Image (cartoon, rainbow, N blue to C red; front, side, top):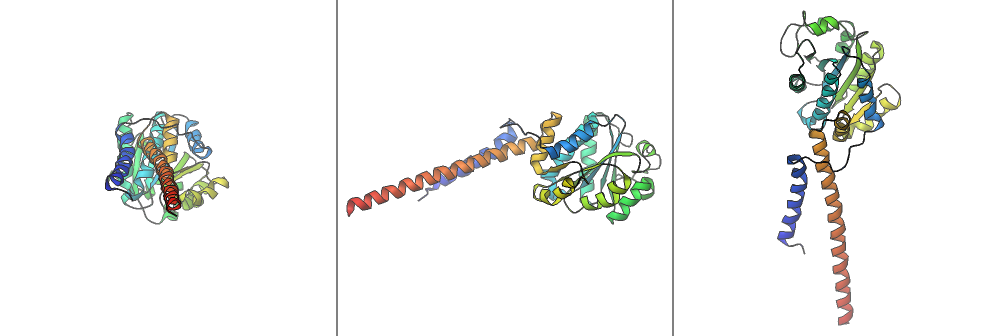
Length: 278
């Protein structure tokens, strides 16, 4: 029978395992990058200063713990290469605010200027029609950005009036079914390469796009975000989260091992007592 203090001890150990790596960051072990994550990283890393990429913030707060650290890592990498970034959200209105915050925070951190080095376009419904129009004329589809400012005279959109022929790479960070229309109506007819990021549970669904070569990189969940942080040399929330997750998994395995040892030891003792009383 488990005593009350033993149960509380287990809970306390789990709480410490979760929060200590978050409060006092340290490396449990390195997050070695996979081939799929390297596909996104290497493509962005090979671009030239002044090139423009698109980052689609196609997620909302429910997927923020996994995809927001991924977004920050991609933006830091792009800005460190002096790339221009066009942010967009076609998943739902709630994602626009996340994109605005990420671009403004990382842009300020790295000395970039809004509407010159980056812009966040707002949400538009009807993905296929919007994506098709962006390939031919961005400002025709978006007369204003997510902050309500006119796009007519924005320097970044004057350099990049349309996706086709101007975009060097596109990354869709997706919580829903947005990768498929981006491939079908954006990347394929527009002629620009594409990568994607998704929640861990959706990785298997999108892997077919990677296998077929329709996207050249795929980042799945918090682990992939931590791998990207490792590649750019800037540890953040994803690395801390993976440390907590790894420690808790090890602790749970130890609990199972110790629990089984105690169970079988108790069972053998009862059998020995029963044999002695016979």
